[in-house]
Length: 268
Image (cartoon, rainbow, N blue to C red; front, side):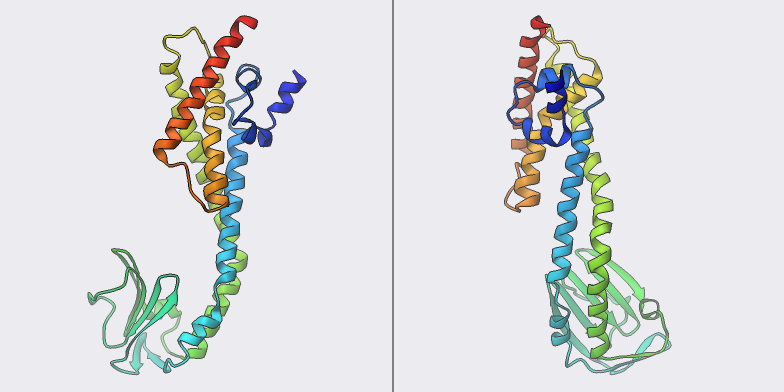
């Protein structure tokens, strides 16, 4: 019994689910609860990986490269929320990472123009944020939080540095706070669907399990694919199992674990 409790350690279960033949008895038959603890631990580990990735992305962003690209930008005089100088100025800037900045003082924010798939477009009276087919408009005075101001290349460079410095401390915690519940819900939902499938899988066998045990069975059957995707996709950035392969491998583990449960029943 003590050995079973040691094997039910959530962190160990993540890796023992690949090979431990005693889990159907120790975790499914003798376990308690619905088996969500290892799923939560995996959610936290995956979310931490996402947060670290966000931190690396922010640190690798170079405000100096932005300053270099906009060094020839003229001073923009804004009065009453509109650019009054320079007039008819059009120029595009590649900010890296597929993001483009276009300044067109001859156009208005509500005018339809061709845009890059990922672009920030500054017009005479507003800012357009283009993401694919979606365009979000914001008045210029709302974006700058003032009606009258002069914007120079140095202002833009200072803004890029301030954004980079702020995101270093704010983005990783935000990513972590969002990723943990999202990933946990994903793992629990998929495990719940697999637990429902076990009713069909045991329809013609003598294996009788309460719903909590079916959830534990589904958890240890799905964990190998979850952990594989975490290590090779999220952590190493190589590849994931894919939907078809993931379902196939999970069903194989489910079939093997059910077989071990059936063989262990007479010994009880």
